[in-house]
Image 1 (cartoon, each protein chain N blue to C red):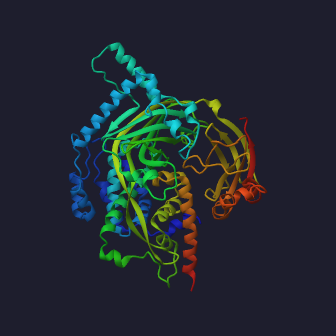
Image 2 (tube, each protein chain N blue to C red):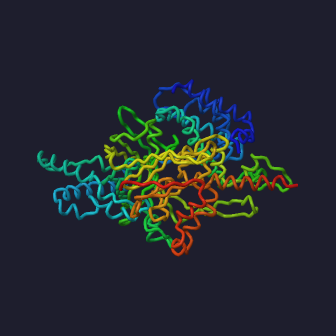
Image 3 (cartoon, rainbow over the protein chains, first blue to last red):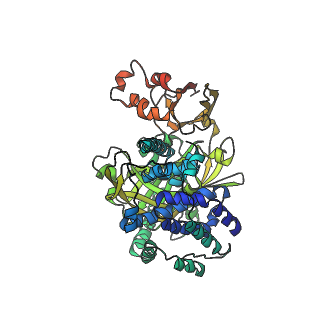
Length: 158
Length: 448
């Protein structure tokens, strides 16, 4: 894969990269840092990718690793703006949309839901990307679906 | 729950993110440049400066570890490897002694009924290390060298950890490898959960690993790694012999290989190259993760065990030869009115693998269940929930069911796992119970 193809592939999956990063990281600036590192790492290690058809899941895995690194660093120091921006618990009077409902899920379930429903990865691919058994992927999807239903129903209540 | 509908629910890419992606892409050097070190390149320094790298990045640079290949731990590792080789030379020159030692030849025998993926591997095992060392010993003897130098492609050392694959048993759905991991500095007691963790109920331990694999056959080369969406071995199940030594069995799942290779069936012979880049295990110590339960709003504290990691590089090449007559293939090609069904069932000496037929869009709505000839649930072979074990059970006839996933998890499996199942099965076995409750069911007979 040459530079031009690499650039085009990354641009094609820009939206997907943002969604994945946003699933782990709250701040857009952190998402930018993560995607920068992921792109550079992918480009540097491009020779290790033997089949281009796996490019998207390969880059996604690299991006997730970068996101987790930033997320772990963030856990040690919580900036003031994060404290105010924390929307982990939905407000009682809001009518929730799907995105907000996803944000309410626990991180490992949230990532699985986003990869399957938003980005369209198969269960086998998610198993590979997250390094978890396929049964666990199914279990997380099932749990996530139940929680989503519950959250969305509660959000629609007057 | 349509993917397209959900996709629209996510926010649009912000301008800042878009600009950063473009900036990074426009600063990429041309391919083919050696030693691309992006963090130090002048191009990247410019945007790092412009965008004011975040605190975690700066801290990471300060914490950069410089490897010292001549540190005391490495010296100990070299000494251990040397003593290992001398010991092996002595053993292979004395076959009676070799058979008695755990290192050569009996890891399968010791662990095949202990690990989760049980099987009679020792009966069909290839004794890779023993045969290789025997050959090397003969070569050394004929050359009459004073200091015998011996190497085996089944023994690899890196960063003070010596890894060997002594036995292998190959099947069409999985490879089973007997592995010994010897750490010169010793593993933490925490890893040995069988002996040291209170309340631990399993009779085996796990050592986790990061790995990639390459399979080569008929001029084709397929690389497998988690990033590409294909599971590779990520743990070994076994036992600690002592503080320094873990012995275990790796199960390499091959049930996905034909689909990936674009073939109907697995080739009978291929080269399997396994590269391990890290071993790791959990310490007792935990770090807390805060989590707000979205249903109740309750603040929860989740303890996550801290991992101790051992990076390195251990690569093995295995010339795999599978006996196709070991695998019985039963074509079923049957569906019900809703489109649920079974395409075919394959049985090896160790496992049963079923190819299911699922209505479009229902790929995650089912759970595959297989019961033995007595109507009892078979165990799962390893971490793949759709591969069932035949170990110690009558599988001349099996009952195969597709159940609604949520209903099976929430209700149906409780029948089998209830305390009074032994009483209940006298009037209704689990298979008979699923006959009434599964969304699809069929029976399959095997010749043996």
